[in-house]
Image (cartoon, rainbow, N blue to C red; front, side, top):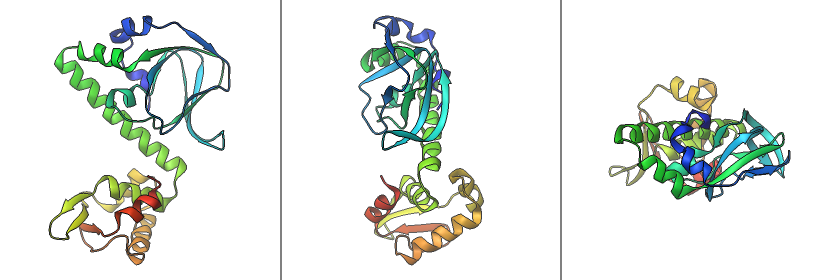
Length: 215
């Protein structure tokens, strides 16, 4: 989630190309799920990140002080915003066109590009996990995890998930107790949303899992 880990100097030319804007506290800067129209470079001020419900920041993931890039990882990966963002104080920012930002990245040496993209993917995944823990109950988190790890399985004739890690490790990733993870899997099996056992779980009704996960 900490987009200020992305190097500022590498993108200074792109940032200078836009005029600074001054916005007041309480301004919504990002909406979760919206496509990235431009990247936001916070110059000064404090921004709260999290999940909004009915226009209110109901679940706070964290807060950051400028200067930093707000959701730069999503822009680099071509994915929609994963968090809501609200100015906690008055802020100064610059909007940078995505194509200008990406051009700055592509001008870097290949090794630097690869490192930056790896950081962006890791950052995005960590933020998704954080948001899931904030906004979703255990059943929804498990359903989302199963969908994210699903692969076609010829033997089952549909999607399946291979559990390559211990259930205790998976539960820790989801922010729940191992007993809760086992209970949720049992409930999903009773509802015919998963099948099989052992290390391979079939997903006979992916659409129902998507509805449960809210994706």
